[in-house]
Image 1 (cartoon, rainbow, N blue to C red):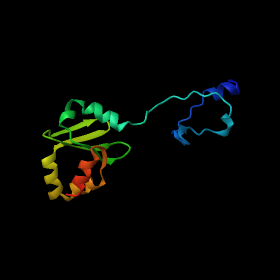
Image 2 (cartoon, rainbow, N blue to C red):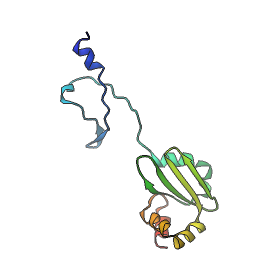
Image 3 (cartoon, rainbow, N blue to C red):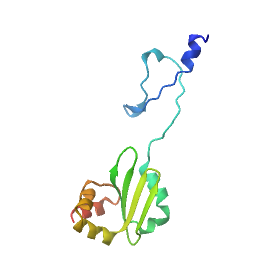
Image 4 (cartoon, rainbow, N blue to C red):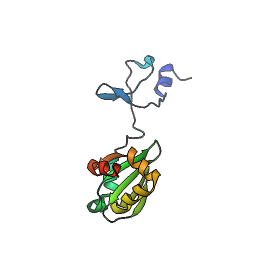
Length: 136
């Protein structure tokens, strides 16, 4: 039979890091107070700006803005107005629609669902263009 100390060493806790002041922390049972713990990162936080810069790196010269139009735990929908590229990409959790700006402006005028997505969008790159698109 294993001693109690050995059983405690094998306990595994799955917790989400929470905000603690200007840092983050993990809440554990009070019985572990004073224990030495090993924390293993299972799923790093998303860095949307870095990820999109890497995904879109070979098209940056043509990109006029990057906007998050829908975000949930599993998928992040991204709209990218461009000067002349028309492409749909799916990379990991990102669904990216790269659309020529003139086509996008036309769609905003003609399609109510596109207009609503633009109104709810958040800017990653070129907030001024997003504000202009919201006024169409």
